[in-house]
Image (cartoon, rainbow over all chains, first blue to last red; front, side, top):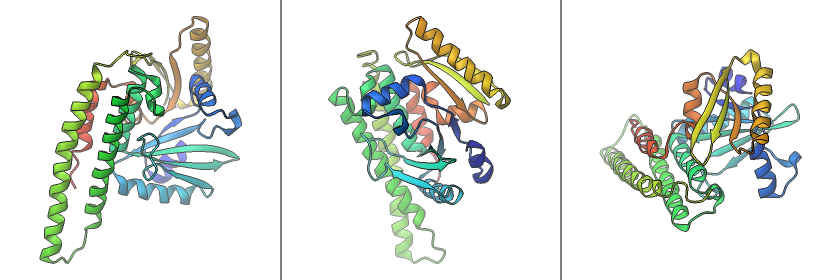
Length: 201
Length: 85
């Protein structure tokens, strides 16, 4: 599958032939399911620039793999986690393809890193309320920034009026402002979360 | 390339990383199993995972969690938002 995505879609995915044994055991306990019901035992991850590239990739994957289910966690985040997972059926097996934008990936990395070094339950909505709250705020900010990016990408008309130009400029300014605020907020969050390392293992 | 990573979650650090050619998939799988059994015998709960990527750089992009410390994420945030529209 990694080869198909690499060759046909010209992308650089990282494949995970199988989940780690500990991850499978944890998932079976957490979700009270049988091994045959675990959908993401094998899979791969692709990180793309933005939501437009993410959308294009979903369409391409549906063309390449005829039997797919799309789980859109952008519209329905899981404890703040936003991404798109495409489950493709290949030779009778389910393979999970995670598609994340750079910003969604950044958030997921923060959540996973905090689960590693602070409290393993953070990734699944547990842990200290202050940390959960910080992650939810950052997730909402990423969604806001991506909505602005998407709105700006749509404004690509060749012949434009003065009003259209002014509106586009306004979107650009809003996005620039969002970036400054997001980086400041993100760094502030990291500084305060660093002190919680090793709190609960 | 196939990468076998042993990761210490509480410390947030890679313990070992070993690269295999794609043709040595079976060796990589056996090595993973041996590592897991060895850690299990010694009562160590490190994460052991096999990942397949074009290069270590490609792996670092999709699985930066294994390579970066919490404080490094601030720099990554800066570069993730520095693209021109």
